[in-house]
Image (cartoon, rainbow, N blue to C red; front, side, top):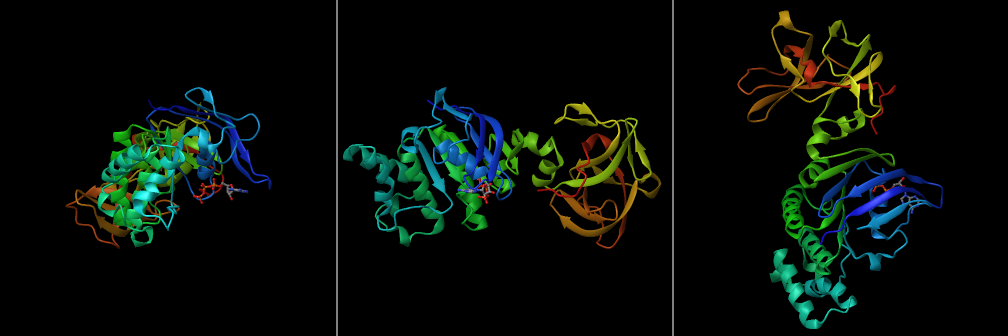
Length: 360
Ligand code: ATP
């Protein structure tokens, strides 16, 4: 049985007046892994703590687990498992004792507890560490113990708050793959907080991108990456190019060039953008190199990165900021050269201009 979580009209203002979250709705399906992604201070942890029962939403907010109202229920009653960045393990207990701790609290028999601890340690590949003290473990091993402890009690929901942040980059990728496999195997509803977009893409069935206490977009990793609904999401998730333009009578003007067939629809406001300043978002395939006669722009190559199957150029002189352009891996292009390029209008997403250049 997997648990569906619903948050309805949940907002959070702390007692000191800090408005951490504007009212929002979010449904997390049973067995789904949802990643809350966003910059520091955007409210990710506050949502996680509300689901856990460590914080309560402002008046009017409702949280249900499978339709049961848990809004004012304590953390113990909700049966959630939690894993934090700071492992929060008991340093004076062994690995096995740490994993068994929750089982003891829940009154599980000694026999069953021993069996479950063994199974958990095996699942996390740390059975050989059962009798080790916590302070004799590496960071990665500690995080495995923390995961084993959280899932040993068979929680309805698993909540993970930046569990990999304290680990080095290589270990982070390895554990991330393991966590992914573990969540699929358990089929448990999981909510995972991170500010690392690569981690979010790798783990999430869906990603909730947050900005300043509001949900900027909810979607699958593919939707978030390919169809960002606003410049913030475009910029925050993946390497993005942004250029300024103007819509005039439904036609797109970039510098001296005019484009007709551009899908200038703003999904957030549900309206066609016909007039006014716009921001154009595109990935590295939105521009391609060409000869001078067909060029929309000419820029200066600042850097060339060999990515195996293609070259990625960083080019200045086209927009306010450098843009990335992908080209064939066997092209011979060096930094310092001029490059001519064409824009591919069907690769553009058009947003109304933000009016300033802030992205967070
Ligand atoms: P980070 O990635 O840095 O952990 P976050 O996205 O998880 O950030 P939250 O911890 O949810 O953000 O905090 C959201 C906002 O609420 C921040 O402005 C934070 O300073 C504020 N906040 C969090 N807890 C409290 C509290 N107990 N009292 C007052 N303000 C708080």
